[in-house]
Amino acid sequence: MNIDRDLFAKLDTYPHIVVCWIADDGYPLQTAAAFETDAGRGQVRISPTGVALPRDREVNIIASHIRPKPGEGYDERRYISLWGRIHPEDGAIVFRPERAWGWDENDIPFFEYAERSNHQAAKYLSRLSQERGIDVKPRLSPIWTFFLATRLPFLTATFIPILLGIAIAANDGFFSWGFAIGTIVAGAAIHIGLNVANDVFDALSGADDANVNPTQYSGGSRVIQYGLVSLPKMALISVTAYAVGLALGLYLVIARQSPELLVIGLAGLLISVFYTAPPVRLVHRGLGEIATGIGFGPVMVLGAYVVQAQQLAWEPLLASIPVGIFISLVLYVNEIPDRSGDAAAGKRTLPVRWSQPAVIRGFLVAVAAAFLLIAVAAPSGALPRPTLIALLAMPIAFEVYRGIRRDYNAPYELMATMGRNVQLHLVAGLLLFAGYLVAVIAERVSSSPPGVFT
Amino acid sequence: MTWIPAAVDAVLRKALVAELTVVGQSGQPLTHPLIPLWDGERLYMTSSVLFSKKVVHIKRNPKVSVAVTDPAGTGGIPTRCTVQGDARILEDDPHESWAEVLPLWRAKEPAIDAFLGKRFALPLFFERSLIEITLRRILYWADGDVAKPPEEAMAPGVVR
Image 1: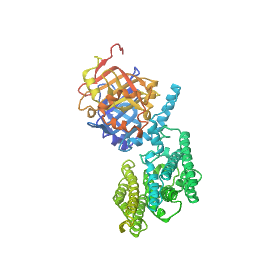
Image 2: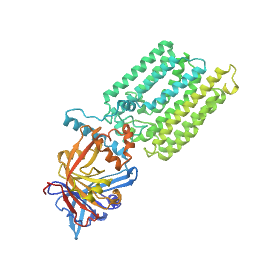
Image 3: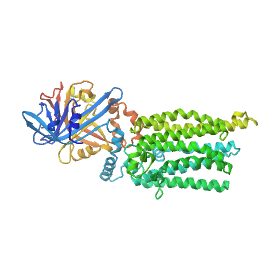
Image 4: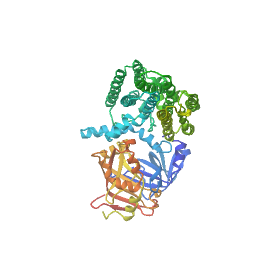
């Protein structure tokens, strides 16, 4: 904190100060005092106090504020702490600050303040471990730790395209429960491997450390930064998850005797691994959004379709495009608050490379393209007509658009919009899936279904 | 502990914020605003490992003082006080040891339960050291007028 007019102006907003010093008996001593600032002379004039203020030693002056909130506690926390000496001047008690420190939660939100202090926690816990001779680490229940480390809720990004691929195959007359479950588990394992690998490589590159504005949707799981799971353990989790996914994938390829599935699976695996892994590091080259869209769109939808149908088709590829766009947009919007940390770590994401208006326009264009494709493909028969129901998700897209415009530079306020954007992917994807289910059921209940269902 | 003046007892029970001063490495005063938790006998404060420098200082030099000065945070009670005492750090298990003062904390900041419910989102915040302060001397201004000399109370057996 600089000692300047701005500091004195801030100090003026407090009703009183507390003067603190170390008394002759070695105990600190404090007294509240009235004061007025003289920014021009860089000093604080302290009103006389009932306790004599020391002139021969350093004092710490603190001004702090809270706003009580009955039933909750308080908010509006802020304080300014100044160090210097007190001396008489023209019959007044004058304090001239030599250094200053402070925090205002309106300037630095508490969560950011806490993130900026992660290193202090690590240092203290290490010190405590040395004092005790045992490893003192932060704890969280194994379930919550697994939930956080794997970012389990994001698996919807895998479930949606796989369910859609299975539904399209069912609509074409191909369905096997066993292979459906196998596909979902394999996809989920690869996704977990990707999520955890992403944290490992972002920890190694410093991207997650540099990000002091993580949210529940962005900035990684933070389990490495918080010391909950070590980097080697995370690497082991990632490798294990990939191994499970790979083994199941190979089983599906062999069981279905499908070279097409092998190619699709390999493409998905390579995209997943090289998303953040060197030397390719797609996300560092500005290809993260496209890679994510392809991986969680065409690769998964087409892969799930081929597992069931044992053949390629155009329809799952077409249906996968809006799904891929929506999942890309989840990443795209989540990258907005991460852009400073990403830039510092050399991750050339679109929000890093583009201006604010371009990023906002980019969202609008992409979301319009996704809905336009459905609006054209469903009535024309390229997709089943009931998939038109996915257009019901459009109001969510407008909400997200408005949220991005409003809170682009406010990471924590943007969290609600990021959550809504995840819902956009989820709702639009589930509605597409529901459209296919309606088509499948209609096919079953009637050998010659009404025209609207064909 | 009958030596605690009633006005001080009342304001410590009510205060939402107090200034804790510790002795820094070079002997300088270092002050931190914290929520004071008073059980009528000892004063408690808690410190997350995220903001643990004060705890390191206390371990090196346990002499501390705590001031309650802001009437806005005392529900309008005008009394101001400064208590001096000896602090000790209780952190056998930083994950849970501090929870023994949770009822006192909850009484002043009910929202803490909501934060605790989302502990998974703030895991380091809830790894905490408990600062237990045994009071030895109290200076207080019952009407809050710090321009006047304070009244003073000493713990039994304490010699200045």
